[in-house]
Image 1: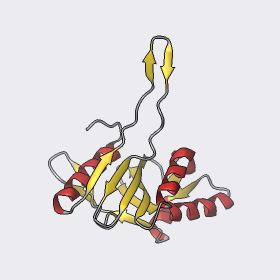
Image 2: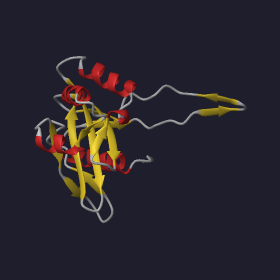
Image 3: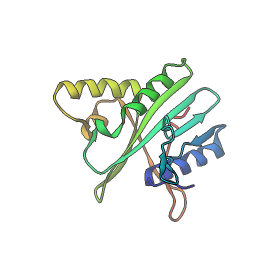
Image 4: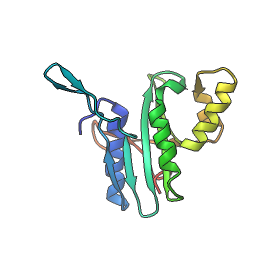
Length: 168
């Protein structure tokens, strides 16, 4: 499993572990660098989100973000990813789109939240109207819009997150 993001790697192991106790199927969309053909550079289409998961009840589209500050900047979720999550969420009542955000504020905190794309859009509009460029960590902790994920240790050097509250 090759990925640059520690959080994406931890989520990969979390989905893999969840698959041992629950009937799920998941796939990771890997970021693809541009191809070089002689002097030409070929840019491939961007991936819609990081993970696609299927359970007995729902289909999930999940974008994973890791940040090292006390707010989630709107610029961290590019327009194409936001639009793909919205489109995926609107397919039918069985599709759900989430953003998983890891606030890696070492040494004092390493916490993660899962937020539904519609709730994210509500918070985004609220804070943009207030002139802010991101959603503060306190909003994730206190507003009840996001689900806090519990950090787990699977093995000596393998960590992950409890996903049962989100992936049902």
